[in-house]
Image (cartoon, rainbow, N blue to C red):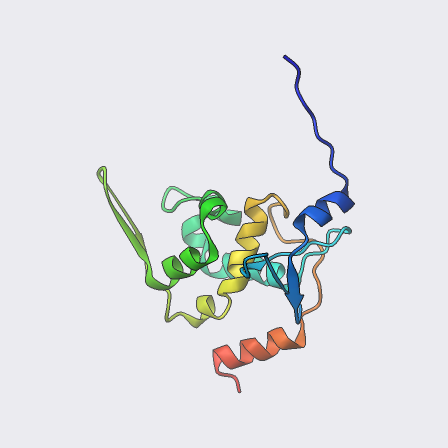
Length: 161
């Protein structure tokens, strides 16, 4: 029995990852969920870069480095493969409690935490890119500039206006 190898060029990979639409530096999948964009030279969009920063600030202590999980909380890289954006948003905002088999797993509600909810799209996008193996572990080497629309949305959400 032979083994089939598939070699994909960087250009072809960029085409596979190409979002369905974009607006003001944000990218969206065909169903309208936020998604990532990585240019052929490896530059990640601003939301993916921001998601890396926010994940490391707010999520890492439970879910481990780069979304890989810990003894305390599951690997989000696995969860996000089958979880849609709405489920992700609801889980983060409302929390989740799984009791059984002698274990208690509790995700606290973060719906009132502006440091999470103002950047929830970015965190989702970063985790999606990680789960698709589109970005490696650690800080992305190159990222797009911060769009003015992103800064305006941040100021509005955080109450800086």
